[in-house]
Amino acid sequence: MELDPELMSNATRYALLIGAIVPRPIAVVGTLNAAGQLNLAPFSFFNAASSDPMVLLFCPANRADGGEKDSLANAKPFSEGGSGCFSISVATERTIRRVVVCAEHLPFGESEFELAHLSAAECTRIRAPYVAESPIHFECETLSVTRFAAGKPHAGNVVMGRVVRIRVDDELASARMDIDPAKLAAVGRLGGRNYLFTRERFELPMGRAALNADDRPSNQIV
Image (tube, rainbow, N blue to C red):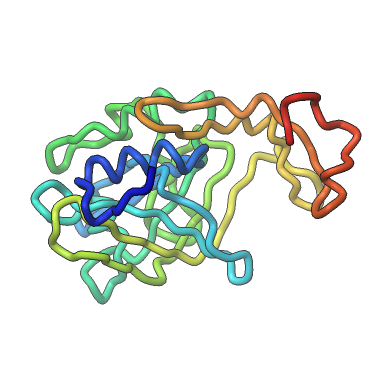
């Protein structure tokens, strides 16, 4: 079938995207507002944008009334009334249930950290908190916010931040900063309410050599 996204409802577009763009990494974004109240929310519309400079992005949608969700309102630049920073903690097997709890819509001033029984830790270079239980976190200073349709219900936004500090548990990384995927035990997002572990892995050489890789599992990788 061929589809015209302009003729689809937003709910249908969203369902197609989250089912087709898989697996997605999960960012646990920590922010704080002008009053110093903490916010924590998971985002699977998230990724790295650049290694030089090191830049990460996450994509908070607008609320149903068109307003900004707390993560966006808090993380946007000082010039727009935000704190100008955010942290990203990696979701793992150890924390995933509590991370998903943070998607709960709470009244203003209530803490997702407390609801999910996660520990808020102080970052080194920014004011936003991070998840102490996460083995890796990034401290980011907000570079920009791109709004695709400001004020429109459920419309998307992209928050980009330059990484100014990183914390990695010592046992996860080699001397050249290769992360051990087995020790990290990251969790990915699929469509619907589905998630996946990253326990099953395989290696392939880059380029044409991949076609002749000796470790190709028969009838599994083509």
